[in-house]
Length: 480
Ligand code: 5GP
Ligand code: MN
Ligand code: MN
Image (cartoon, rainbow, N blue to C red; front, top):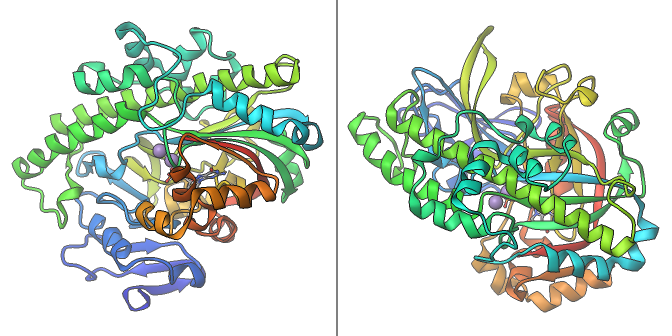
């Protein structure tokens, strides 16, 4: 890959126009020297492919956790002019609004460690996980529509959580403009029994503790201190989002021909942003995004109940409030400055987290002086991080940062490399309790299948697009 890129500055590499034909803008890859060696040539090509799409602004980007994805690389960020540009399902991904939320507690790690096995069991029992797992909640058609339209806000009104929760979600837990009439019956049928489930594999619910503070002032604004126990939830829109993506990939493969858009890879199916096809996808995508927020909200409620059962105190008393909830697979219409002018663009973040700066109106009032919390999971055996968005993110990356450590090997390769039981034993020897629906998941998700979260996070920190606030370590993890 070294001869495919040109170093602009530390952690900042260009994929020049001409890497492939018809690039409208250059590519940018944000990685360290060391991480660059782990990037596959195919990922560079994917960044370049996106640079050929109509209306792309500034450059096609990838974060340090980048790896191969469907059409667009995972870790990719691309913004398109709202008139001249396009919208593409591949730029969002199959798990629409996959995202992360972090719940604080007032508990210290010493209070939780003696109970971690019971607590992890209780969480595993109360929050359905695994491929095709079914929820404890049976959504009616009406309730599904409510989830599609009002996301976390509906879930709170239905009794899953407290009013303050939505204030601490990106977009307040739901986006306007969703239209269930553009969602297929198949997507509805997949979504109904899964509302309130974690899903499989990479999705997790993790009890953690803060082991390091990098910025005291930001940490206290976020309500974090050393030794404190937190809970991280990672999941998305389940079968509903997957089916919506699948349905619209078909639609947009037709649209791309009808609108005579030339694409270098058929996985980049897209349509002009204002076309009927693109807008129908967008309205359906918003349904899935809202569904995902409702899903994380319901899981939050059962997480609180699980803690209540184990510690015999109510969740409020345990200080279990939401620090923040961020999406990392979504397209949004946002205002950004391009060539000195403010304009609305469709920002596609696919395995990338929004990282808005201090003072931005979309940052909750209590955090507004420091910036938006950015939640970066590591793995079930390595640190996860809480960062804070910055002004530099607006200048460099359309207000975005990385979303995780990023995989270094496929699931198939992981199963050859690791044995679930060994990985589990190793983690338990380090004091980390694991509960998974199937042992193969533990192999597929072994810490060794991911890049170093510390290395990845250091890149965004050094670039200044998000600043390190705190580091958390796993104590108990439930996996699909
Ligand atoms: P994705 O959304 O692309 O599947 O992954 C998000 C990130 O979550 C991965 O890149 C990985 O770094 C992280 N991750 C996966 N499994 C776990 C886990 O069990 N615990 C934590 N803390 N992070 C994980
Ligand atoms: Mn996901
Ligand atoms: Mn995810």
